[in-house]
Amino acid sequence: MNVGLKTQILPAGEAAVAAAARCLAAGGLVAFPTETVYGLGADATNPAAIARLYQAKGRPSFNPLIAHVRDLSAGMRIGRFDATAIALAEAFWPGPLTLVLPKTNDCPVADLATAGLDSVAIRVPAHPLAREILRAFGGPVVAPSANLSGHVSPTTAAHVQSDLAGRIDLIVDGGAVAVGVESTIVGCFDEPMLLRPGGVPRGQIERVLGRALVQKSEDADNDAGQPLAPGMLASHYAPRTLVRLDAERIEAGEALLAFGPGAVPGVSAATAVMNLSARGDLTEAAANLFGYLRALDARGARAIAVMPVPHHGLGEAINDRLRRAAMGRQ
Ligand code: TXA
Ligand code: MG
Image (cartoon, rainbow, N blue to C red; front, side, top):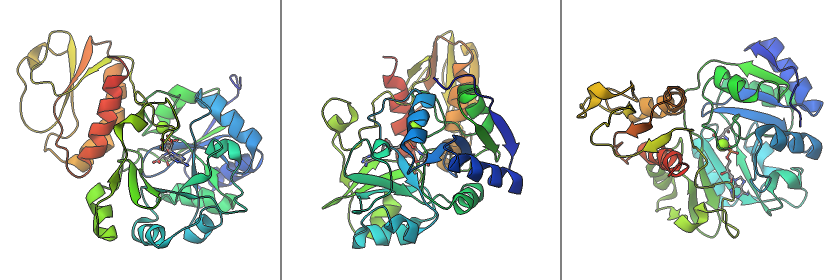
């Protein structure tokens, strides 16, 4: 295990970008902010670095990674873009959209990073620090969320530190991220398919496509067989505390994860209360989601009771993550 490493933490800036690029080139592991969540980066072409990455996260090795690149032309060196993929890339990159595409013949991304699949997941992040690091490094960087496998994704450098200190080389601290849920993943197969709801709402993608995205079947959530998104284990986002969804009243000893201005019966008995967005704003709720789950998880409550969150726009991604958090412990 690569436990016992000295993990350096650097504030955002030129020195941090240069250190990150050097570290990646040397096969190191660097956590850095993207607009969605913090990623744990490794050189996508270096199998030894990727093996260390899986080890640092404690991640099952069948879980393929997203290759982050600086722009569409860099993406075209690793994935084969059809007209649909180009339209989506032009509409949403840089930004919180990942495209799963057939690999190019000379795709430089290591097989270990794609779990031996003949497809590759690609994204161009929008966060200025992520972009500067990609530019300084010069090649594709695989980056899963920078948390221990099964934990909630990190939205601050402190979250990364609490999961991965001693297991990775460098954390670049760029403050809290803006979006708060991971990228939307679209598989560009015969028909474009929504593999994971995320930071770009489905409706925006469908407007560009001029048609509905095909829905991934629910069975693909289980790790049995060969699902389309093999990493999407049902309990991927589990806190330690039991999570109870669609709570309409609070039981004694529960913590409340609230949404909107409404009150819930029993709230005075809650051990802790955090509101994802008191004004009912889904963008604000997404940005707060993982941090609040972490904070409530640390309170030692009997359960985290979660008020219903509307399912439109970013609500689809928020409800997906909440459902996974709840499934982990039921
Ligand atoms: O916002 C994000 O996407 C963040 C930031 C750091 O970029 N990254 C992220 O990575 O969420 P990760 O590893 O936590 O999730 C990647 C997802 C997994 O569910 C994985 O199964 C899926 O992408 N994936 C990767 N390659 C795939 C492929 N070839 N086919 C289908 N799914 C794939
Ligand atoms: Mg993750």
